[in-house]
Each structure stands twice: as structure tokens, then as C-alpha cells.
Amino acid sequence: MRTVRVTHPFHPWLGREFVFVAVRRTWGEDRVFFFDVDGVQRSLPSGWTDAATPDVFVVAAGGRSLFRVEDLLVLA
Image (cartoon, rainbow, N blue to C red):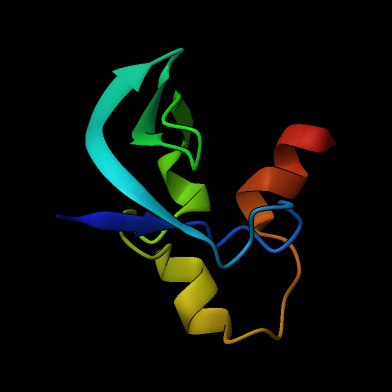
């Protein structure tokens, strides 16, 4: 049985593992579908879980930068 762990630092389920169902593209993004502790199927953006490929910028920044340049430009 495959599991998925929530890795988003501000999500209340941070660190919890759930039974993995699938990764699907919905609502314009890749989302991870899983069963919660009550057996209800839920989904989160794949980037909020360990099912996602690590963001190259985040790995390279090594915690030294809080924001990606491309995200700041979108906000400008």
C-alpha cells in the first residue's frame, strides 16, 4: 500500500501520511488524491505532498530565499 505525506509547512496535516489513490490534473494543477483517516477521498495540490518532484529553485536556494523571482514578478 502506497502512502503520501503532507509536506506543506502551514497545512494542519503537515507530516501526516495517508493512503495514496492517484495523481490527476484537475482545477488546472496536478493534485494528489488520497483517503483520509475516515476513509473519505480528498485531494491536495501535489506540491504540498511528498508525491511532487522537488522544486528546483527551492532545492538550490536551500532555505536562503523565501520567494521565487517568478512569483514576485506575478505579484508586481
